[in-house]
Amino acid sequence: MEDHSEPTTGKSKNFAILITVLATSFVTTFSGSALNLSIPEISKEFGISAALIGWLVTSYILCSASLAVPFGRIADMGARRQVYLFGILIFALASGVTFFAQAFWHVLVLRILQGVGGAMIFSTNIAILVNAYPPQMRGKVIGFSVAATYVGLSMGPVVGGLLTHNSGWRSVFLVNFICGLIAFLVALFNVPKTSRAGNKSSKEKKDYDVPGMLMYFVSMLSTMYGLTILSSGILGWVLTIAGIGLLILFVRHEGRVEHPALAVRLFKNNPNFLLSNLAALLNYGATFATGYLVSIYLQTVQAYDAQQAGLILICQPAVMAVISPFAGRLSDKKSPFLLASIGMAFCAVSLFSYIFLGTDAPMFHIIINLVLVGIGFGLFSSPNTNVIMSSVPPKDSSIASSLLATMRTVGQVLSMAIITFIMNSHLGDKTLQNSPPELLVSAMKTSFIVFAAICAVGVLTSLQRKTNKEASKS
Image (cartoon, rainbow, N blue to C red; front, top):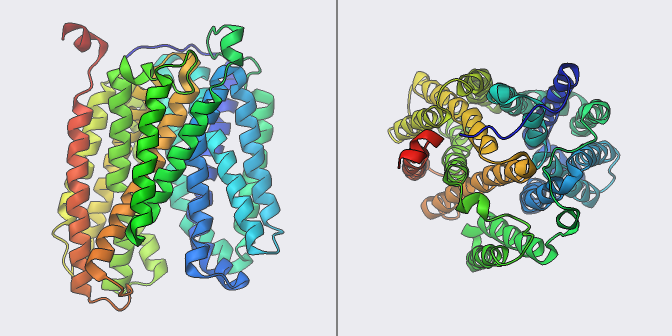
């Protein structure tokens, strides 16, 4: 692993940048997880169907995934600070205006704007963080950022439920606005005005591959939306296949242009970067939907209420939040490749254990598995991010950050698409409430078999990575 970057600011400003990145990492994940608790109330207030209300979640995911790389390219052309600041501001203002929304379409449009702001944040926050600190502290600060993400995931359902119950769903967006505004003000005065994006020529900085970015945007939008409706009929398959086909054409196009939107060389000449991104995709694809499945199991099969299920499920992100800073610091001293591989192995063991879940599984079985996934993901995420950000020079940091965010989002959507497909094949038109517990458990076991297999492939992929010393010998 190479050390490409150098610290760009003083210690006090470095700390302020760290606080800003922690705040944005927290609020972007808190927003989504807290909103899930508000969906029923929003649907009730505006009289919106279950199919339409889901667009509040889908629209954000589609925007943030499709736009992260285009914004990452703009950031790496010398506008990293501007993209970051505008991203925070757009996210915060969209959240604040949502507090006053009078119709469902107002909320939907503002969620799309939140997705745009989120894409701008995802494409720059890790890049700004790693370029503010010396290489020997990179894993440590990445660990704190990852921990903030999991704290947001942990607190979202709890705080979101409390806010929605006591102050209404609009209060969730008000909290997002306040956190976002504070982050913007701190960033405004502390993120360096001069971008360390590398020594590019002025011509290169002015060149932006618009056709390439349009191809990328349409391909990601088509693929992601196709995956979300894959189980609904032929349209989902057509959109997914068309999106993947267009993505292949995009890669071929990028190899031919002088100033590509996405430098294919990052993957071509850098196997660690390629394998680390692939490992992230596989790990998120294998583990993201486990919380959803366990939630269904607890509430539908074992008859826990939503509050009890939420308190049980919080074990996983809470463990992640504790482990991530430790794993990040350790990845600065020990092999991050090995740590990430061990983390994925923990996840694989937990997913395999879930296969033996029965209708009357003891609570300790569930909690142990949640803790195992928490440890595994905590050990994987920070070191894997450290590898990705260490594998590219500073001028490509934003693209690296945006690609990692895209891998995360695509993995999450793929995970949910797999579950939806398996649930539909097992349950047909039956609702969760009307399905026999044995049938539900059977569908869950099939899902966990698939997820365990994906995670096992991820472990093998992660183990293929080599240090520079190892690579030079081979």
